[in-house]
Amino acid sequence: FHDKVPLLHSSFRSSRQTMANLSNTNPNGNDHDHDNNDGGSTAIDLLRDSLSPQSQQNPSTLLPKAPLFYQQSQQEAATSLFTDSEILAPMVRASTTPLRILALSHGASLVYSEEMVDRSIFPTERVLNESLGTIDYVHPKHKFSLKVQKRMEKEPDNPDGKILLRIDPLKERGKFVYQMGTGEGHLALEAAEKVYRDADGIDVNMGCPKKFSVSGGMGSALLSDPKRACDIISTLSRNIPKPISAKIRLLDDTDPRPTIEFAKSLIASGATAIAVHGRIVGDESHIPARWETLVEVVRQLKQSESVPVIVNGDFYTRADINELKRRSGCDGIMLARPALYNVSLFRRGDVRNNGNNSKNGANNQQIDSAFENEVPLSKFQSQYHEGYYGYNSPLLLPRSTMIQEYIAQCVRYKAHPKNAKYVVCEMMNIRRAPTERAPFLNMNYPGGQTIADICKCRTLDDLVKVWDVRWIIPVPDASVVTEIGSG
Image (cartoon, rainbow, N blue to C red):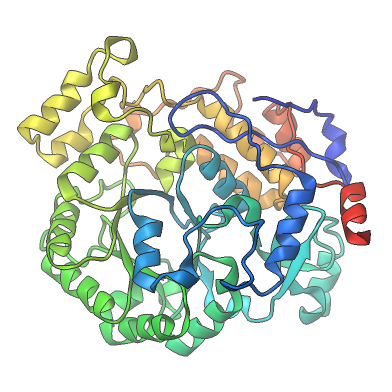
């Protein structure tokens, strides 16, 4: 990293601590480049600018380059957003600001929020957080019970309410998709109307099989109720001037037709992009994703539909990503657990032909052979990938470095310690990885850190000490905010 600021662990106790910014990682695999977009006044000006109505006659001069949604149709904007995309998937508790920013810094082109139940955003207030340079959606403390209010008073970072969503517009503008869990069109619309100005797309979760989601008629419950699913998409598409997408699962383990029919019905209702997870409801995470069916679904959809189609499920190497792109013709890929394992997997490196050289791995012939001879996908999934795009690719950064960077981002964005602990534990273990992949995933850490060490942590400062994080990330300090505010 460049511009490292030495860390004194006790410094995290100060709410006005000035932090230094990690440079963006070049997704082409080069060393960290200097980020010329960082700066206190720019961040605050951008935030203030975001509060003012913009139009083609009154354009913002501060916003980073992004798809011009208001000058494009929904479909044109979606095509611009999702074509050749590599996306951080929506993961409950994980896809919050620290991981989203970390993924973008290592080459992700889009990031999704965690799934947020429609009603949860209703009572929130949109707050300009000048001390962090973020836009926060805060559930005010006075709207909670007295018991909860007393508990919240003991949390120094969030004394005024519960933060449901925190967005960094300087980093995420043009790259952020808000995902909601919803079961009714009118609830979906009310939630979308609350946040769409700060998002670049609205996605409806139609694949989550968890009880909290399905019991409310959300998530994968919509797969068996296409009429209601289509009504949600139609309602959003007719009323929200941003791309409207859906994330679904396979509806059958071997037959692609039910999934294709469901996706087509969503597209006919106004969906401008579809993401398909390569598992059916009931598949556990240790079962390999059903790539054969997934590929056939995408191939047939692309023959008849013009909307972007995204694939998701067990892409643990660049070889996996390249193979699924080649075989399916998909418009993009989405990483969930593999991104937790090593978020630098988003680093694309050179194109395939340029990457094939001896110093970067002599066994690229194995991958090239798979391209030419059509190795069965089930075999491709289970074999060890070597070379430039394999498990030990030179594009990948050390996993310990990724965890350290994540913790630094948690401090930067004042993440809740319990949530940070959960994500670090998920980054450190492979309990959710397919069984056949586990032998290829390295779980050793130079510092000897263990899950037990993380479980003992109570604060972000504890995590910093365990992982020996020695740099911090700057945000506008109090003097900068005061100067701009008085100007």
